[in-house]
Image (spheres, protein in one colour):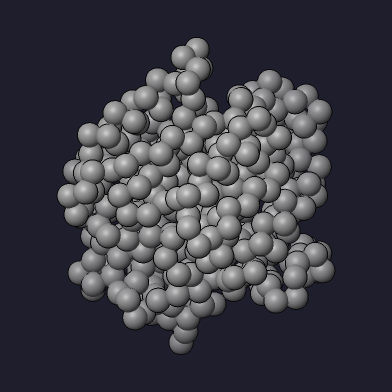
Length: 374
Ligand code: KQY
């Protein structure tokens, strides 16, 4: 089929160079944002009951982010009126096609040289393509990054030959990147590249000098263990790590292995990494009733009752004013907020219920993508 690609526009240039060579790097999420991008949920095999419950959670999140950032919400034609009606007037709603609603993974990753912001358009194949991807097709999602660059009038680096999702990398903005081997070395992403070649690609695109490789992400995380669900920078040289003391939980060995790696690592500037353990909630399982609210995909259920969901408080969003943290109705909800509060002086740490987002397979960080101020 003849496919017209958006490869030119008066609003942006498609760049064949690489960000690091141009003096650009990905800033830490804790630095000042111009705004945030989200995609209105609609996919009925991802979000239960026609996505209505998830939409309530999105609205609450967007209300909080829009207190201190410009928020842009992409909505399909069919959903535009509803999104416009339910969202605060100051939120910009734009009509855009999408396959699902994970802005972290399909919107551009933004880089800056301190004066100008540019986007990176990675290849997207729904977390593993035909090997172990989560839906097919994904062509609408794969076009979102450059449409957003066009909309925001940001020049765009063409990196579509490299498969990467924004949720699989975290940076400190000072040369250090965190990721997992489980995800970046998975068979469904860039199987022809060696670990060294992938490191080189991350350095030249995200402007980092040091990569800290954790082995695995959260137990049963269907993204092949995205970093943003298990470990995140809260400031340079400080990370939070999802943690359990329960030795019978398969998550225990995974988190312990991450801890050992982090505690024996230093960052790009030679500082030791200080690890703050962020407790996990008790394991969260999807119920039969919740499963009934999900449509089948290609005739098959997407989830089965009793399946463990990849619940983690690490999947928060750092907005200019607040840190917005998933809550699961668990005893550890408040404890998690209290671990985070001293790590974010100057920001209010706020929890919001996100079980309806978790059922889709991710959480707050996965549905947001920040745009740096400069
Ligand atoms: O966590 C994410 N970044 C995306 C999750 C995708 C789940 C699709 N069901």
